[in-house]
Image 1 (cartoon, rainbow, N blue to C red):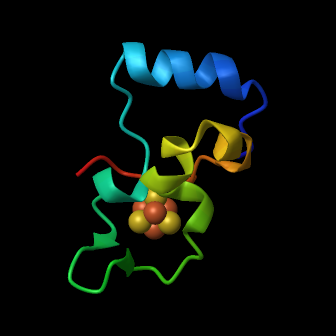
Image 2 (cartoon, protein in one colour):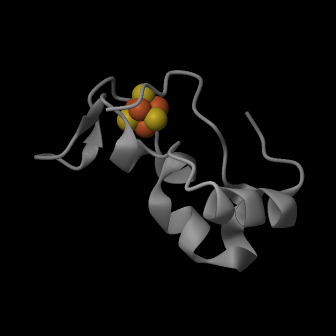
Image 3 (tube, rainbow, N blue to C red):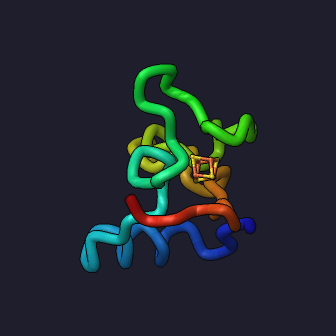
Length: 67
Ligand code: SF4
């Protein structure tokens, strides 16, 4: 799902310590550093949110499950 209000989301993500990226997902294969389900995950990764100029490219994965 697209994140429409990136600036607001980045603020809330920081304030509430939201967990929603692949690195926090039970389906992330840490040994192979990729999604265990084989999904393309570039827009779901932490790195997207570490660059505010790219945050609007970030997306929520509907398959996310907190690890
Ligand atoms: S299910 Fe979605 S959030 Fe979880 S590792 Fe795969 S792509 Fe990332």
